[in-house]
Figure (cartoon, one colour):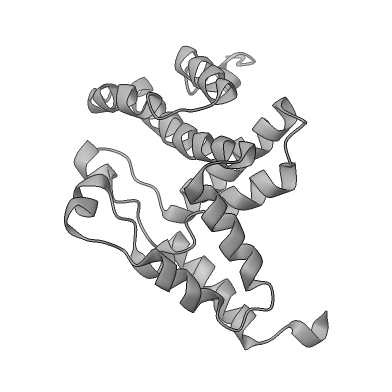
Length: 188
């Protein structure tokens, strides 16, 4: 394996790291909240892990890895929100091709990202829902601390959920306050 480690892999690691500095652009329209693409990817991947435990028949590694890499091209294209996408087209395929050039396992990254975008496998549907649930968590957190605008967004995001598991998780998220996990054992 050490023979297959090269500078292109180090480049890919630095490229993935840049996602920690790229802000998610939709929060500008919301007027509240902020997160980097990497923060979004972390919670999306953690949600996928939870989903894989709820649904043990899915390929957990494929689901989790798909979520981990689903926004990798945004290191090159930036995070385009729905308004920007009306006017600007990101060349994601070209960005991905350039990112994986000289990567020995590059085809596996392409396969995962393409599977995510095609959305046809059970893992891709769950990954899509994990992506939406990450936004639902963020919006619900903002509602819980007093922001009203996220309440307008929630119905649109909830409508994007595809799986029964995603819908059930969203119901649970919406019934739970962001601070309930630590308040239940709070001693004053």
